[in-house]
Image (tube, rainbow, N blue to C red; front, side, top):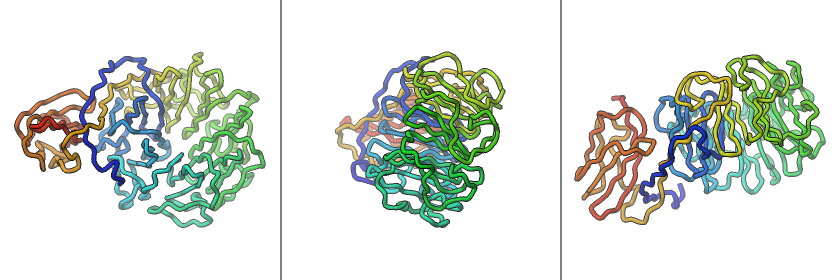
Length: 464
């Protein structure tokens, strides 16, 4: 880990933002299988929903029905995948981080050793874009393409079927890669010249080359040079061209391709005749898109209300959701949906069995529902005399109490919950009893006799 992150001298700043139903604070969103993640305008990272594999990143495996803050306010970009149970994120220094299921060892350490808190993946600080699945693809700021993970069907693109669970490998020598998309066993990518490329598994035409033969190296799809953006589902794809037309191909169960049928498509197929599409998002079995007019459209599986049209009926073609004209971006999970409006408000709908909608309940929603904007707990750099990395809370996780080690002359210890609310103050002691606290994440602010402060993260557990 680089030196600029090894020593953090921090103090606590509360942003007294009220919990308003239509708060305008969200910048970016992404959906997992049964979990969700978002970044606010202040750069703070928030997660909620299912947490079996630690995919919320809060150090526990307990699901959360409302957004909780993870770490400091220095997150730049996030992405998860509705087909897997882990999250990738890029920090403001362009370093790559991940947490959650580590089935293929993609985040380092032993295979199946899940990560319940963010860990840095590799040492490169030049990540431009990324896409996760059974494997990970990244494009670096120099335009090179890199891959890591499962390679059973050649989805890494290095010409082999050899897994690369612990090392990133460069794919080819090109320096003009622009964007990538990862399915379960296939990959798609765009180059800066507007060409479309694909490789990996191809049983349902997800590569778009007109065959069902898998490819172990990138192959160009067609000859067009006006591809603009891509979104990969587990076994199908959506894409936009620079002329505003919408295209899709691959597995077409429940009509998620959107051409009015349920027949698989082996080549990119234009969806409708409109030429005013702005953005796209592929879920597991449903699709989403936004037009230049700011209207939201959805199609495919609707068994849990994930299309948001107030019904449970599947749609075989793009169907407008509501009449609002201020939608900005959308993300489709396994069977739930998140979307942002241009005012920064967050909305969700669909399945909610694990709290993945973030509205504080586990009740399914079949129309867009506004999600409150929680107050941020922002950790900022402070010039004081305490070296943060030398101070240790022990044990951590703690069940009944913890001790502050490597610091003498303690004046005050304050414990805050994950929402930034003070729940306890203790003077002139380095041992704090937390037996009465509920299991979860807490922040411990320590002040020495000189007025210097340091903030440490504490995990309260019930396990012996």
